[in-house]
Image 1 (tube, rainbow, N blue to C red):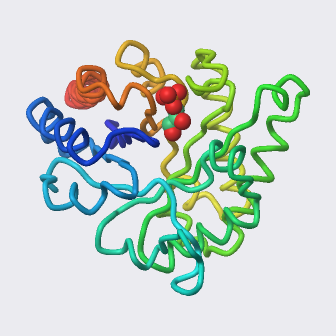
Image 2 (image 1 turned 135 degrees about the vertical axis):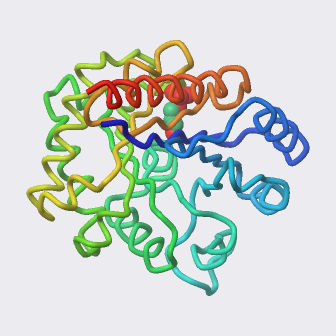
Length: 266
Ligand code: 13P
């Protein structure tokens, strides 16, 4: 059966308002609407507001890269989920750069996930082990701890809406940038789905969407999208290049089309 694919571009701390606007314009020219492909752009916080007035909502949805879990108060420098409610569909939570550079611990990630859901914003929860944890054989324990804590304040119904991105830190281009083997990715994704099934039941595990992120580009994305448990990709570096990002969406497009033809032939 053909699946719905979610492609998210995480622009990280790149592109000022005019650069972001130019990239959006180019992507708009290149990317076609497909009912089974959802394309999400995550610009910097500063650029969300202007981009929200320019974006064609039939083609793109917006995501924030971060937010604070309190709704308002004396928290200098922070922006709350409630303030983002009208601007974004999604928010990235628990990205390894926030966990490692900004020391966000499991409990902060949990509170952010709960706050996003409370404010009707879909969390894109990132989980993944570091290279050191991988070599120490701790991958499953790390994923287990990150998932169980992050989701602990949600109901099974709420879990169905959550998106989880498996982003092994060693595979992110700006960390070690090792290209993950599709088999390794599939076993990580399977483990995540199994955790959800054990905690919240099979219905939630089936509904939850799982993405892969880590050095994904237009050349290799299909090898991940073809995996049974992979519902899309979270793209960093390649999302800043419109050829590459549009190429990634094209790959998803061709895969969905091929699967549709297979379905029709059966
Ligand atoms: P790269 O695609 O640059 O490896 O980044 C992945 C990532 O961190 C997306 O959130």
